[in-house]
Length: 193
Image (tube, rainbow, N blue to C red; front, side):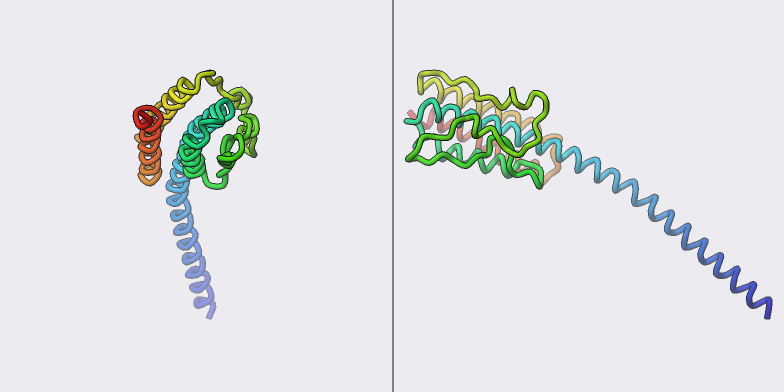
């Protein structure tokens, strides 16, 4: 009978060692892809944050123009509302309210001041306060709209440039937002003639 006990112990030991080796092999194989996934998720988060900040800066420009030229509210509010949606769509998950994503100003009221639009629960860095300051707006409404169109083109170009480093699903979103920005630029310049 002792032989049976010894054999069982050896079998259990060998089975336990094999199971431990299998688990170790699985966990070391999984840690590589998990690290890569975490790294790519982190890169996507950085890209999303950067893209949302670009559109947030454009939104602050809209707010500054609307504050300086309330007569443009009816013309600019629909475009501004689209930019608000872009900021939300581009942002990383869980941080949908970035600076500059305040609600659209009412057409019957004058828009909120840019400082109010720039405040929000985002995590500002050392230079974030300076970058969120209201951009200067020309006194001439036509010049202000032309500058806004140029800002739309610059933002659309930046989103287009980011396509190459974006995962496929996010690249499609960036392409859509860039195309919308190009249309906005057209509507602000050629479309108003």
